[in-house]
Length: 97
Image (tube, rainbow, N blue to C red):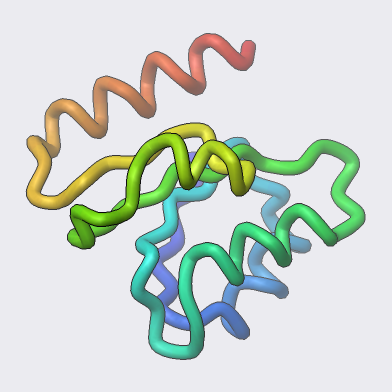
């Protein structure tokens, strides 16, 4: 498993090409845009298989339905239990196999 922590959308492009991840976790707040910009960029890139994107946000006005309508698989509203997130990641990745 490879985990990379990046705060700018511009940083993600080479990593996505190199790693072709099984899952992307993205905060909606980013230094040079937002997670929806990243999600749109992933959807437009020519990956053999597009990685699913799960969104994280402290903005309670953003809903799971909104992120799903934009193509993300789920939304975790902050604050959340870390165990809940890690359990979800493990279950999600297991289901992909």
